[in-house]
Length: 159
Figure 1: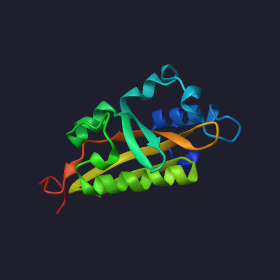
Figure 2: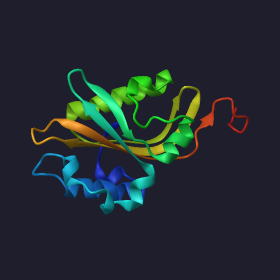
Figure 3: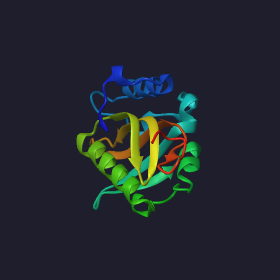
Figure 4: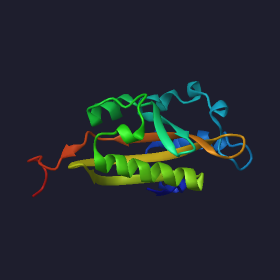
C-alpha cells in the first residue's frame, strides 16, 4: 500500500467514499468517528471494514468486517484483534498497513494483485484514518473492492 492520490482511485464507490472522507476533515485533521455518518455512504456499506486503534500498546480490533471480506477469508473477524487472524501473511500485511496509516495519519491505497497465504487477491483498497481531537488515529476505515481470491493451486491459473 502507498499514500493515496485521488487520481489513482478507479472504483467509483471508492472515489465517492474518499471524497466524503476528505470533505469531513476538521481543518487539516482527518475526521473523527463523530464527524462521519454511515447513512451518508450507503453505497459503501458492503465493502467497508471498521478497525479500532488502541494505543499503549498499539493494537487493532475489528469493530465491523464487511460481509464479502468475511466470505472471501472464510472466517469471521468482527470483534477480534488483528493478532487473532489465523493466516500469518495476511496478519503481517494488515499489521504493516495499519501501522503505516497510524504513523502517517494519512490514507493509503492499493490496486492490483497480491499473493497472501497461497491465495491470489485481486483488489482495489484504501485505508482511511479517523482521529481524536488531539490528532491521534483511533479508527481506520478499510474499504476493499475485491474479487473472490483464487488458490495458487487453481488449475485455471496460467502455468
